[in-house]
Length: 274
Image (cartoon, rainbow, N blue to C red; front, side, top):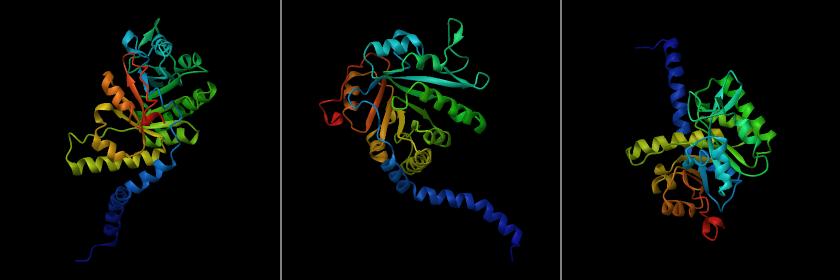
């Protein structure tokens, strides 16, 4: 039986994306290793790796100007805050989710926070909804982020986290340091499924041209550490003193978020601080 030319072409069009994906997956390790080798060095402190989660969350005012200032006042090298892009405002609001957390009846703008810290302090900007935005809205959002980071001279003191590789690449084009959010789970999935998932995450990191990867600390197992190798790793959230000390001693781990005041934990004097 001879298959009509039109049907053969249809099947080729259907198979082409699968074949391309298969090729990329087979090359994921090579592409990933090249991307890691070409990534910018992590530009923040190698000594004080414990940063404040949503500012200093222990005071009970997460993602507030007060919690950020309190964390820095206690000696935190940096803080993580959650940000959401508001299309109507054309700006970023500091809040973990919607409806926004209000302060004095108003949402807290990212610019308000950044304008208070133009000289010192590092920022992990967790762009919570960036991956959910349409390309046009995401483009406006990334332009706004780049503008704010440059306006307040934070190019070497702030980075943006997201799970959307393309949108992170737009930020990378403007010289913004970024972290690609991943979620490996070798404890839950079988080895083949874990390997496939890791290959997809490696491709995402490659296309994002990110400087680091970030994940929940519970996912950073020995298997995961081996899988991702020498890439800069950012972890959330750890409140146990001993765990913080052990993680700080790992050279690849660059930042660990904590709700509590563990900001004096140092990696200096160990191999990680050299």
